[in-house]
Image (cartoon, rainbow, N blue to C red; front, side, top):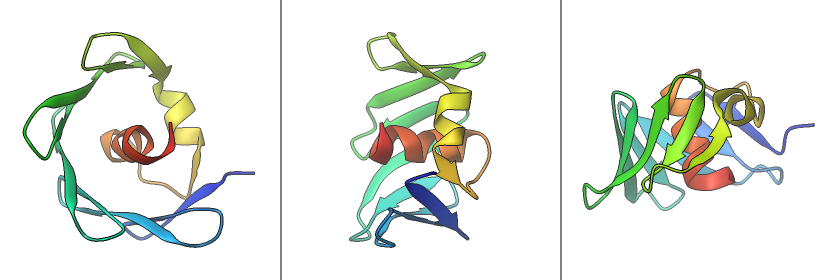
Length: 95
């Protein structure tokens, strides 16, 4: 059973609390603060610092250390978005 689920562009936890929303390439927390932006295969924080990179089937942090596979991230969100949006939400809120 997944602990997180997507409904539209909104990410909810297992208690059905809204924890994030995506708007275009931006990721916002439950308080509508922009916390990250997706640019291609990269995720940047609100201060424009690189947080994460996707290369091949793996996710790497800012220090270039492999932290997970794409499949791990996508499996953790029920009904989730595909690709970078799912990975970005996973990286920011779930891992």
